[in-house]
Length: 135
View 1: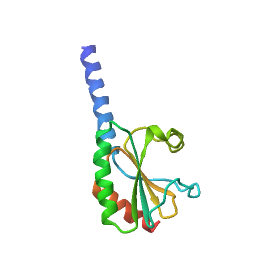
View 2: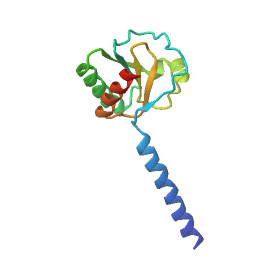
View 3: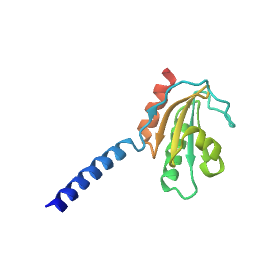
């Protein structure tokens, strides 16, 4: 009987963890604006910049690249920048990138206004650009 209770409890905990993880993956979340915009090593988009951290063998990174490039092509003043996480470990540590793909939405001044870990949906990216232009 104890074994069955342990199995059921383990299954319940794993199910809750899986549902929370699935809900958070790819969701763009607002970032606190505690710092001034930083000086980036690349040219920013006039309206916004979609900054993507990727790695070489990441399949979701390729799909994310396609989505972000498509959005950048649709919306005037938006630029997509892809950074190899392995080549920029100092920036990865500074920004707290824990997995790839991780996407940051920067405003026109270079401040981080949104962040997503995992592959974001196209509609969510477009909505985040609308929110970032009003902030």
